[in-house]
Amino acid sequence: MNAGLLLSDDLLFASQLMAAGPVIMLRDAKSLLERAKLSGAQLVFIDLQVAGSMLHELIAGLRQLDPPPRIVGFGSHVMVDVLKAAREAGCDEVLPRSKFSERLAACGLAGFQAKPQAAKDEAPSV
Image (cartoon, rainbow, N blue to C red; front, side, top):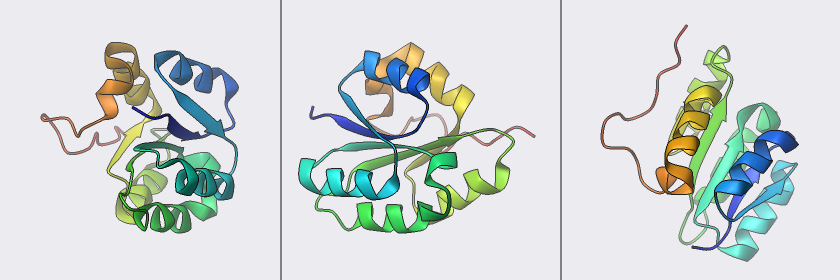
């Protein structure tokens, strides 16, 4: 597996993800999209708070790649509108950060390679 890409500005969270497998952290959407084009990454993690207003443009750009990577968005469970917007923009999976962390701890990066059988997406609890 080639390295996954992570859009985040949280070094602690990024270190947990990098400990699970090969992941390259980038701090802005433009850099992530450029790296994805060059690397052929198969897996992209997007911190939805960092993506901000670039979310739709970023996902559209990733979807144009051949082959497009699997896109997993994550964010605070209280950001219900942002989580919904990420689903609508085309993320393959959108998770509250807590659920993302639970799966990472249980399965490592392999837990994000394919869509889970049990549920489409984790719905944020309000």
